[in-house]
Image (spheres, rainbow, N blue to C red):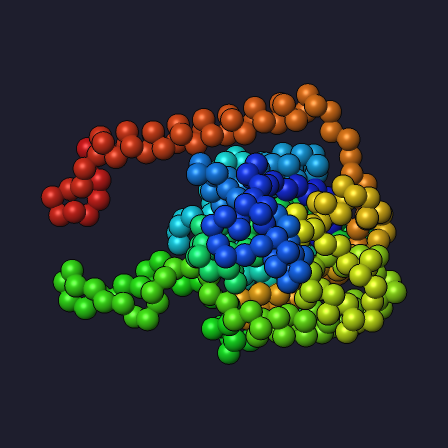
Length: 382
């Protein structure tokens, strides 16, 4: 029996702190007019010191599960698309799985920069199509503010923090994620990059270290080249995925692109000969949130009534790697009304999950304290 991966829940989370262009101009040589004319951005959200990529992702996922009316124990896969994980390992997804109390879920991070959400959506939908899992949570989450050079106005004015998530559920009813196209071109890796933390120290001998050419662990971008790349691949990605789905642009109700830059989307729309009304944009309020931008825009589009059952929607992403991709999704749900009491009870459920997690950590420490390796170091000995 064919299984189709339907989006049945969605949720987003933005940090409380909102930084306008005018506020940025106090720290870097720029103005609101300069930023807005070149990017379409007016403001972005910045994570508080206590907020992390994992906590943002958890908040978005919890809201998506509320909409889907799905218990965390029913989730079998958690994928977090991110360029800003808290650790190289463990994965951010494992921390989210723990926060949710999704005790039956596998979890991993996916790194495809700003294309990450489209890539992750494909991985999850294929897992459902093959019957490997029934329910999955796909999250895009970023704390880009922590990997920016705040003196570099070519990058620091662009990015913001946030998280968005969707719940995918397997069904025999045709629809959901209908087609996806994924592409990459590593020859352009130098155009948009973020060095890993360990790349600026190379062991020579003993405790001696030297640099290997990476002098900072912040986003580096060739804006002109990225602009040319993005305007080309948006059009080709949409055309490719529509051909796969055997649809035309006239069959599409809405296109939700990666929210990088208004001018990029306007140029791509002209290439496709489509009106801007066909594209949903919220970059003005959120800035570029990398892998989080598409699910964040999806949540806003649903809130604004831009999607109705049986609409076909296209997600299109592009970013570092270079990577790009697009998905066609048949939208077949209406936002449900969730009573306030349900929201409150579900929040208690997550608090209880944190408590169980702390208990398991305590039990491991106790177990480690009462055991010791045998004389040969081969295993525990009481």
